[in-house]
Image (cartoon, rainbow over all chains, first blue to last red):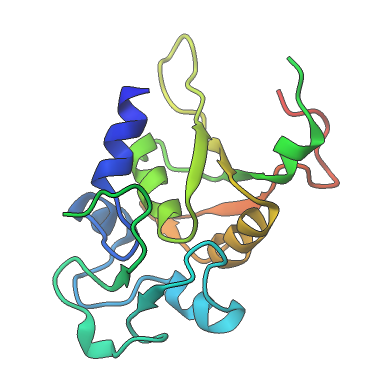
Length: 79
Length: 96
């Protein structure tokens, strides 16, 4: 499906688009609500190398639309 | 339709979805937590509007359970608190 491939390319864990920020009412520089859940329940089982600001990554790493980074390349796509 | 219990175990029901929410937005939100396999986000055939719920399929039961724990009652999209629960919940009386 074309749309699905487009979404896979466009959206990455650790980065929140303007559209999603507006929907969440989340300004840049603020942690999204699921970060506190990561503290509570542990890191996502399918993202073993996920680094999330304020959880297992320094809070000062929040920058622009990025609050986390996934080291593993899932399909070789990285911008 | 041959639906197996396995697929159900990998799938979560997402409710109280505001009509402004697009499929892309659902993808972007859930991919923050787990990789997604599939999204079913039905539209009303006559009105051509979303109906306030979606089904999101993951690659494992762990992912589905974890997504429920992290996103149920914790995320508001356009002011509405998302409900996220396993699609094969005890109260489910046949999923379309």
